[in-house]
Image (cartoon, rainbow, N blue to C red; front, side, top):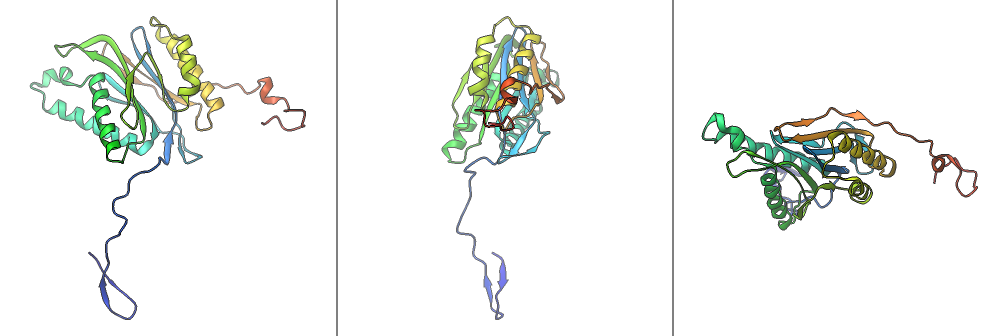
Length: 262
């Protein structure tokens, strides 16, 4: 305890705060939707680079698609500081796996596959939720499953875990507002034999629609992929072309002579 000198010259001990440990009760600095789709030879993820501080579009260069190892990729929406904490945790686990491998030449086989990372995150999220101190994120995990001998399977994996530990797999996934707007479009257009170019075009169209309709979205985006060859690639941020000359955007509403806004 620290000593403080009050007026009048008497020395007293400063008592510890009665508030105790504080938990995050609501997210403050947040990212919006993450979209994901399987295609013929891998999995694609997409997200914008905006992180909002409350309702203010504050950070426009935040990266929310993060490689974990040579065959696993995650994307996160929700509280950005919690996403950074999850990324640090998974990368620390990956480093421990490499350091404890039986041989330096077998480190690739010692890495966790995407399904193992997904299962681990499910336990982490449920544990934090049970302590009433959740990590305020929805995490998409993409990659490939693993054969019994440790080699990478040809079967792609795509799963999601939310802040209370609810987890499931699917061929197309969307978090945040994308679950309401983008996911129905992705389910309508999805085919198991999609080429990479088709899957990328679908994700870009959905991100563009989210930019039109979600006030927490941005047209500066990233695309990431995991391939059967064991490559995890994340693009540099780039901007989507947008079109604002739709008749509904420019015509006055209800004949009120307004500027075209709602």
